[in-house]
Image (cartoon, rainbow, N blue to C red):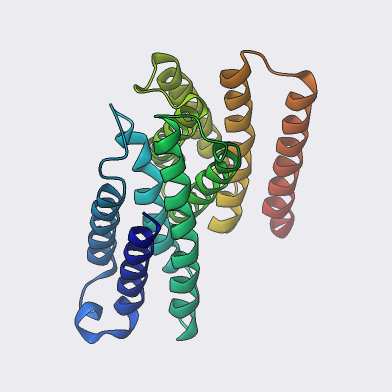
Length: 259
């Protein structure tokens, strides 16, 4: 299985790097390349997990292996145009995507039988979820659309990210109604916050970081509620403090330059 992951990761990393250095691939527009890369990532993920899932578990397993590469390619258009940037980006993608496949494989196996590695995989999965949200939210705000458009796009992005992360808490054969409802609530909350954040100036990366931190806080609260059935006051207070600091920092860096 690990050999399969290494081969898939190497091929995708090579393709990502080739877009900048191979003349034939350079003829494609960025939009065409993004579409091709997303399809390749989705197909590679299906091949990687073929035969390891049961029921509808394949759906949440494919969310991050599809959206994370898409976020990397989108975010690459915001990076400086330097010859070494694509090389470093492909190297980072290769290492991180390999570990992402390992995490998703642990999810797949744990949905069939209990294994100790799931305890280490869960927080790493949350990290990849928040990182993917940051990459794609930054891309959304770089388009500089109206607040309602940013809000709708955020809802469409956060829902599948929340769905796969909340499903991983129980790793059931089917996606429960409660997981779907909580994912929808999380995405709607983040959509409203994104619409409000669109009213304030600032770099797209600032908006993306702010929303990613709040997404982490909201998602963590919902995950604890789903896992234990109740949320400790101390945990809620910690997430509230982190969210409050993120909000104050966002307001400071957004409004101070305009004063």
